[in-house]
Length: 370
Image (tube, rainbow, N blue to C red):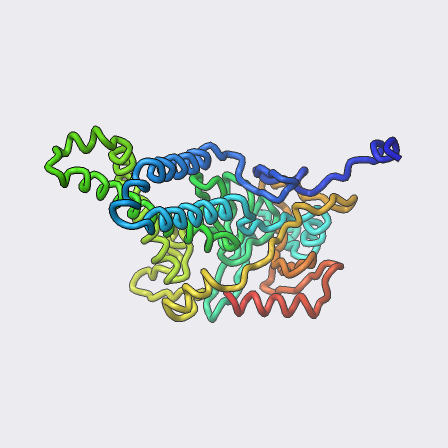
């Protein structure tokens, strides 16, 4: 029995052959970028500063002021680390790449006929237009993933993935920030800002209380040098963290991403007013949708087993002669793909694992939620 068990072939999971530049741990449950050195610096700074505060400041402040100070500090520390790890270890919303069969099928459907008398070659269209809330939105073709990226998606050059609702790639957390982990990223930076202000105020209070008995300030510094170190670290950190938290608060209330804000996607040009088609109509509605709305499922089955038909189309290194499709992943293993024939017409192609009725319902639900 044991010999037969040892001779069983190894079942390869999809995360083991994943084409993107990602690092997987715990049998594919943890997904990060390959460059995680700065992430370790982030964890080290938070843990070292907090532990110094708990060891040298909290015992004194708990006796002199209130025992609630260590309790509040412990809650903030736990919440900050929990949101940091949740953001760093999760799938940000990676969109699957087209398979060779899908790419070949799309090539046949959207191939642009060229006249034999035409002196120039007409390549297939590299953009496609869709209407979102009455506004025309262009979908760009990704040469690496061989898909037309859905609205608000972008390709991360560091992780080499197309990410749904791409905000930015953050080296401090070692991962992309996208639709599936943005709420945790926002919670992390806001809670970190509160913790920096809290620890800084407590460290300064410790030093001030030591000087109450006519003790020189230099003697207070000599008595508690750890408080000075904690105060300096928090002082120089709090400005950037507060600025980042304020910037993302603005983005959350307006339902924008960092990528869209930098590109000026919703900034009117030449006096023309351009409305954000993804806004829910108000500050509260946008915050509720982004921070408390339904969590979309992961589009990649990274812990699934590799099957013979599972393969990924290679990236395009030169000017393509094909023009693939845009993907709208839906619940389960089904996937909807929007196919353009190059003349402005769009059809729907559904994989064998999902029904056409479910696909159409998922498209309508996706557009209504955008």
